[in-house]
Length: 350
Image (spheres, rainbow, N blue to C red):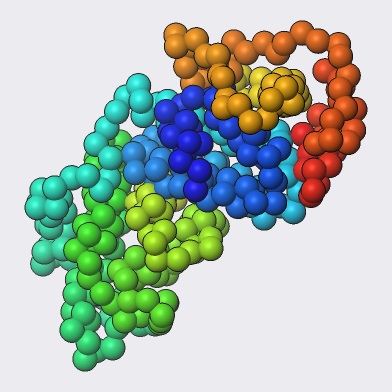
């Protein structure tokens, strides 16, 4: 992961983030593209720790875009800029309206928020309900068998309450408590022998297994793909936000009218990125050509943050065509073809 890029996006510094990602690509595409992928995944995880059920549809849009970007054998600069802009918009929402992030609540307080769902004697799984989890459950003689039944029952209990609730505030609370449940189970370091992920008995795979059984939806599959991308054990803590965010996705799948789409101001900012990606790229490239070894000197008005930068951005005026060893093709600011190919070790596009 690139810490500088991560910190810049998390602070909603759109201009700086676009500069940094462009520099990484121009410096060494083959080496840095995977670093960019990992950084973007970790940003999605970070957003998953605070995203609200109201904004969850926007997070899903970003995760879908990121999967497409990772799986594409071509690097499209415009798509990278749009991804950064969308992530900065959500981080800017958190900066302006901070909430308690998942994973930071004292574990005793966390337990008090959720325990009643798991001790509810009025709610039990039917025999048919239990049978669908048969392939996920530990062996009946395992020490974790009864615990696994209790956890599944509590999670199903919350989801059933979400399904029948018609009150926005109640659904909001239930969604957060489902996310808190995932946080609590992981932090308790429970272990489960499960066929879902036989090589690791960490509770994270047990929770992913529950979701895969309860929700056969593409949205959760995409998030799991991001979680599992080049996964090694040391990535666990950096990616837990994807698991937490998935709890809200389950709620969204049950109550799709509860979440909003991009609003008009956000769409205008994204449209501006779409229109000006070539100019943005050329402005940055020109600065790097002058002296590639100098650290970025980003001139950013502190009064213009996040989405407002995109709405106020104007490219430098220039009619000079340039050719450089990085590009091997001539570019002009008047070039209307924003899909024009640029060659740099491997093919990528603006």
